[in-house]
Amino acid sequence: MDNLPLLTIGITLLTCVLAVIGVHVYSSGKAQREALVERMSHTGQITVVGRRRRFRGLDRRLRTTGIGKRIERKIAVTGLDLTPGEYVVYVVAGLLGLYFLVGAIFASFFGVLAALAGLWGGNAFLNWQRVKRTEAFINQLPELTRVLANATQAGLAMRTALVMASEELDDPAGEELRKVADQLAVGHTLDDALGELADRLPSRELVVLVTTLVLSSRAGGQVVTSLRNLTETLEERKETRREVKTVLSQIQVTALAVPMIGLGFLLLINNMTPGALDKMTGATVGQVGTIVAFALYAVGYLAIRRMSRIQV
Image (cartoon, rainbow, N blue to C red; front, side, top):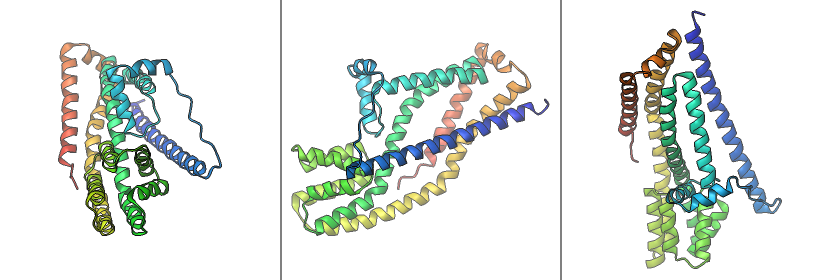
């Protein structure tokens, strides 16, 4: 029983590792299934039927409110198959789970702090999904420009080239280009359709591509040469971004490791002296000190991320 704190920390770390592995395996399997369904639906081998939506009543009421409309707009740019009602229910369930889990491991006051952090994390998750989708789209831009250059060199119009690219490219580029093709089919101009695409997935690379296509459609010119030069530039930027991400990976791990070490020490202290955290957070001074400590950890994390952010 003398090694109980170390054993507890070891079991906790092992559980976290297994949880991360499980989430990774689940997400990769889900992505493979969606890709398979997408390919088979295009060939007509299966018919895709939309899944049954949950919490329809809550979703209808939520869509009439301002916060519901904001949530709907955020979800729309992430590519997630969620409704605002489902998102709110899942977030509330996650907050309750955080409160009871963290409160049972540390103290009830830490459960309240974890629930507040989870409330911020729900919005941060949507922003992270949007950034992730944007980065995936940016990685496909060299292939997109190559398809557009080949299509225009073959004599196809830009609208037809975009439709062909939407059929050949995987998601998210394929899905986003299908939205552009649908807008063009119902009478939207090329400028408006591509402008909305740039608004959904904001990035400098996409802005350059949209500007090139719009100017080419307005003033003419050697669009094939411009697209091929842009393809080479995007390939170089893609490699540079990959190198920068590899170099900064250690710094990003450090930013996460520092607050995790602090939580580990709290868990160690509570195991060495059972009830210590309850006594500490039972007084106003202890609660204020805990809030200040977590605020300093958050400031340190954000400062490290800010200093390690390099725009390529």
